[in-house]
Length: 95
Length: 194
Ligand SMILES: [Zn+2]
Image (tube, rainbow over all chains, first blue to last red; front, side):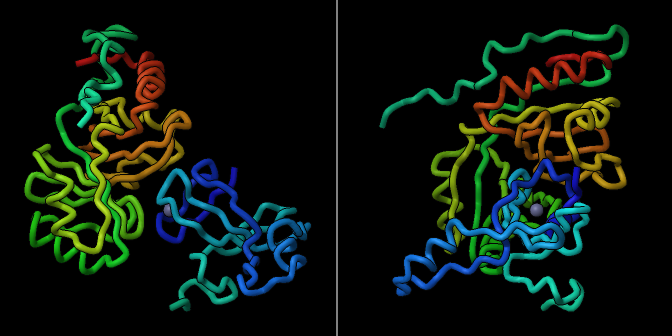
């Protein structure tokens, strides 16, 4: 069982959260007509053994999406933030 | 308009009053709270909505997770950023009155989609802790706190009314499941149904 710090609710049990997606995806612009770009956005993933950024949703809590930087090998969570937050910036320094 | 007769509770006929479980002083009293109205309020303009609701209904909508506020015959629970559950007295055109006050928000009357269970007594926290991942110690979850979480894997909103008194709101379709879980968890402490 992980404990995940929701940016709004604080530290909560993993059972209140739902894994959503890769946290680094950026949807191709709708004017982009490259099938490959859209295919890669929807299907192509690069699962890591180590630290990766993920999107989760506090589904049984505040309902918000959040970013989680998690080590898939040790399950250690290094940082969490709102979807727009840059996790490289320490939490207290974010605007 | 079609009368769907939704004023019938999902728990009608599910429980009977009396004492159950372990003998002796009951650890808790369980009851269903009926007759109140529930509104779901959400806004993209938190400041404007808070000002309007404070003026109109005398309640300062809380802006922090886990906070509640009480106003003129209503109580507001924080359920997300710019999102609240309002408990108030039912009256005609209630939804419309709140929507008119809070111009930049969405107001939905969810009264008939939810049920509210009250659990009260010295064993209340121990019983809830059996199926809820929240830290329910009185220092972490004091009187006036609220939270959305899970009880027995059922999505719930918990409102701490007093040191050993809680109102649990859940979806109507989960009423029987939550009741079954609650009575099972309370049996070892003994419980009264009112
Ligand atoms: Zn949350």
